[in-house]
Length: 121
Image (tube, rainbow, N blue to C red; front, side, top):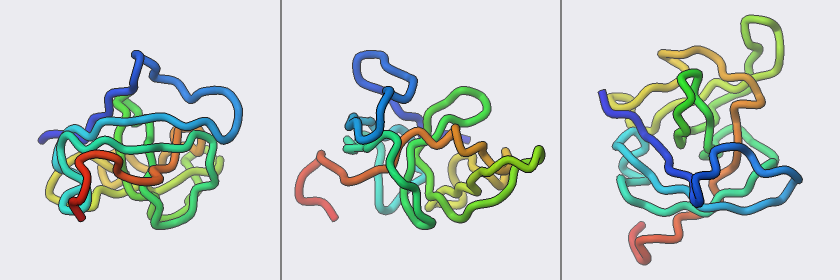
């Protein structure tokens, strides 16, 4: 089952320090179709406020960076704050249905917009 993987520029895989930092991510896979497709380039904002319904860059428990939809806040097994994240394409990818609630720290950035390819909706 292909996963939506994200490649971070300059090999950077950790959240940059400080609120408001910007970055780019490249979409890999089909889990967020039809809105996002393999190869799309995304502008992301690190340490941004996450709202239900936002697309977010998350670190999955296996270490993979992925774009998912932040569906709702939920408590983790330990009672800590977390997020239930979902794929837009439920037949593809891995999300909270498979891995459970992600710790709040697993949400690395909020997707602000697709910067490439231009003109595709």
